[in-house]
Length: 495
Image 1 (tube, rainbow, N blue to C red):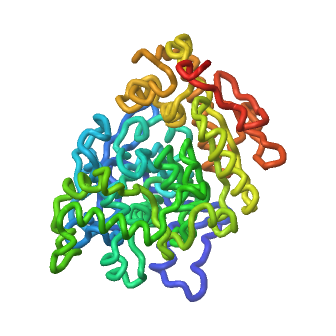
Image 2 (tube, rainbow, N blue to C red):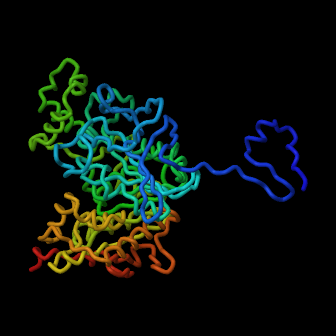
Image 3 (cartoon, rainbow, N blue to C red):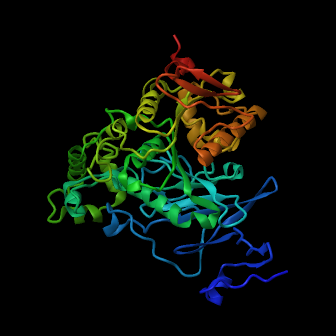
C-alpha cells in the first residue's frame, strides 16, 4: 500500500483537519458526530430528552430560544439576537405560550408570557449533518391564540418518517400585529405591525444557522401551518424578507389570507393601534409609545378585545414586510416560487368552495412550482357512526401521527362540535393508524422532494384550474376532480 502524500502547499494541521488518510484507493473518513441529548447551537449548548419509540431513539428539545425576549423596550420591535449562554441550557421543559387571553390555548402546556420566542425541535437523526428534510410548523389560533407547545405537533411519529420537526411560538394579537403611527415613525421605514411575521422569519434564520446540528438540512425546509398557521405561512410566503429561508410550503385550512377581502392597510392598522391606546387612556401621554410599552400586556390584549376598539388580528400591508397584499403578491407572481400543498377538511364549506381553489389557482397560475390540493375526509369510527364529518383541525393528529392521543386534546374536542360530533369518544381503531401513516408519508415526501406522491401508495397529481384535480384523503386515497364540490355539510346543517 502506498501512503497518499500531503498535497503541495497544504499545512500538516490543515491536512489532518480534513479528517482522512488514504492508502492506495481506500480512505478512512472521520466518524460522523452523533446527535445526542446535548446539542451545540450557535449560542450555546442545550439539553433535551431521548425517547424510545418502537426501538428508535427520538430526541425532543423544548424551549430553544431563537430570539431575545421581546419585553420592555423590545416590545413591538423586530426580534433581536439571542444572548449566548454558558454551560448547558435546560431543554426539557416547555417555554411560555405567547401573550394571549387566559385559557385560550385550552390546557396546552406552558405559562403565558411575552417572553415566548422559543421553538421546539424533534429529531430521530442519528448523526449531525444527515441532512434530513426540515418541517417547520406554525400553529393555528387566528393570529391571536394557540401555541407550538403541543404534543399533537411535538411528538415522535412524524420525525420517524425521516424528517426533523420544528414547532414555533411567535407573538400574537396586538403584541404581535399592532401598528401605530409612533411605531411607524420609530421604525425608520414608515412601517409597523407584523412583528409576529418577523418572529417567524427569525425562527427560519435560526433553522438555517442551527438545524444541521440536529441532523436537518437547512437547504430543504418546508414551512406549513393550520388555520391561523396557514395565514402565517402565507405571510412568510409573500414577504421578500424570507428569501432563501424555505423551499416548500403547506397551508391546511388556512387559505383566507389569499382573498382580496382579507387586507389590512397600514392606515387601517395604525388607526386600530390608536384605538387600543385610547382605550387604555394613553393617547394623551407625553410619550405615548413609552406609555404603551410600560402597560401590562394583559391590559393591551383586553383593550384590543373590546368590541368598540374592533382590533383586526391580521397582518398589515406595511410596504416593507408585506409590500402589497398577499392576494396581489400571488396574483403578480411576486411570492417565493416554491411547491405548495393546500387543502381543507370535508366539512369546511368556505375553505373548500372559496379560498382553497382561490389560493391553488393563484399559485398554479403565477408560479413555476407545482401545487397539490387535498380534501381530508376521514373521521374516526366513533364519530363517523354518529354521523359527523371531518371538521376544522381534524387532520392534525393524522399529519403528525398522534392518534389516538391527539383526538382527545381539549382543542380538538372543542372543534369537533363544528362537524356535528356530539360525543367526546372518537372511537379510533386500526384504520386511524393507517390513515395517519399515509398522511405522514405524503407530507414527509413533499418535504423531501416537493412532490407528495409516494411510490406504491399514491400518485398525487398537481393541480391546475383546467384539471381541477385533488386528493381525497379518507380510509382510502382517491384522486378526484372538482374541489368546490367536495364539501359535505355537517348533519345539523342538512335540510
